[in-house]
Length: 178
Length: 244
Image (cartoon, rainbow over the protein chains, first blue to last red):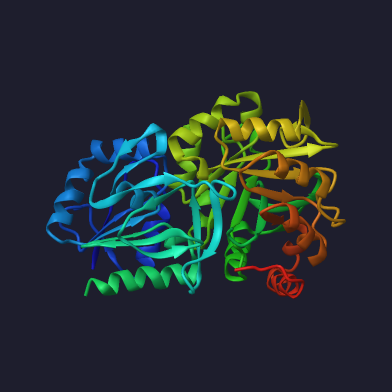
């Protein structure tokens, strides 16, 4: 399996790359045609979106999505797939998934640490914004933790930083691609 | 609320993990790559790496060493020491760090915090505060900054810090317990997570710290016996502290 990891300047691509390498996945720079495109997530929305556009990844991702080719968005990568985000005074997203990203209002923000997803295991979160979308499929403390819409899978947590539980999650995403 | 976090801290000088008491008398306690991997396997919630000589030596953090440590981790990794610019921070993220910690350079030029947050997002920006008697000290504790820890934590948050890593120099390495008064005051003053640091001696101390802060940094009590992390987690659970 070949994975394309979309770099956009500020992301923690290193740990995402390592996580897929540990699963035995190969890597390609071809975002449009890879078996899986990964949109990783560290950075601020505006800087990340500009980075994607500079590299032409925005168009490649939209084209993939329209062809039903799988995309995994992690944290900010999930938020960028939505129509828009409140972050940085409002930034338009890729619009793959209906919804918007809104600022967290309860508890300490950024929400940082390990938290349970559904009734299952704990995963690592580090975010100030979260998705508000009809395509949510899993929650963590009432916050959207996972989104699925067509060929897009998005997780608000960082599987690449969530130890064995995160590795198992990435493996299940890869396996679901057949 | 996420689970409270236990965070082993690797203070690194000349490529080795060191530990002293109140920032003095540093002793070699191990190899950062080996210790980091061990803590990751023992159930650490995160790992912190602080190059404690970088600012004093006037150089950047050991990027190559950060790369080797992070290669063995699948948990979040914060790196600090000598970070003076967005470029320094990017180099560390490229080497596998998830967050950067800034201390002296942010005290000299608080706009650095905003520049980092704008570029990397607040969740990747940790402001490390070393305090003695409630007053912030910079340059590995050698210089009085003339600010109180509470005021500086507030300013750091307003500038874009995503977490405060608060070390009590008075408690550091003593194993007499965390500085709960200072930690509680800072945690009450800010809305971002606070990591308590300095003074852990036993499970009771850590439980107390997690009562006022969102995470506890651990160094001296672990480095001699990394397996202590696993037993400590068990003791904390027995005390009713919910961990992941």
